[in-house]
Length: 136
Figure 1 (cartoon, rainbow, N blue to C red):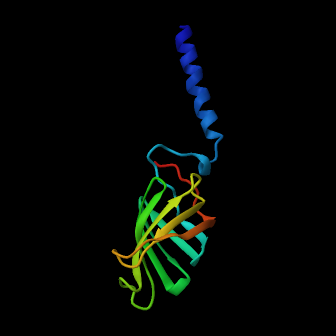
Figure 2 (figure 1 turned 90 degrees about the vertical axis):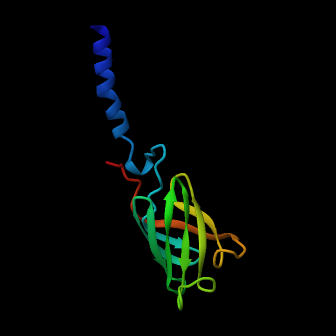
Figure 3 (figure 1 turned 60 degrees about the vertical axis):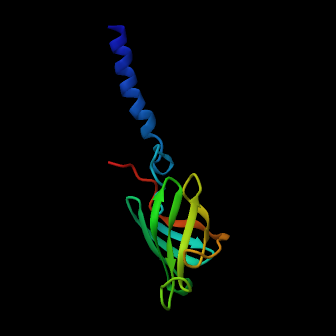
């Protein structure tokens, strides 16, 4: 009987403790940053949208576009800009590493798929947007 009472108490207390943490601070093993929202970057203001692990967006420099995937805190994708939005002159690869709280990133980019990487060539700070979401 005593074991049942202790187990019942733990079941009632544990959810209350976890519920006190804001969703933006909760992380789940294997889950990705939620990066949707507005960002200030060294390439201008950027707006990102995210559905599951797919990320798309636009930034102000040369009417830029972003698309790629996020896994954990790592984003890998492509950038493209006006006027052609084509590799290698107006497009290429990009990789970002988000901070643990998903509120900033540093990254690198290159022209096309074979050029040299511009290390630490892309940085950003989140200014507004979706917080870390609880998955259903």
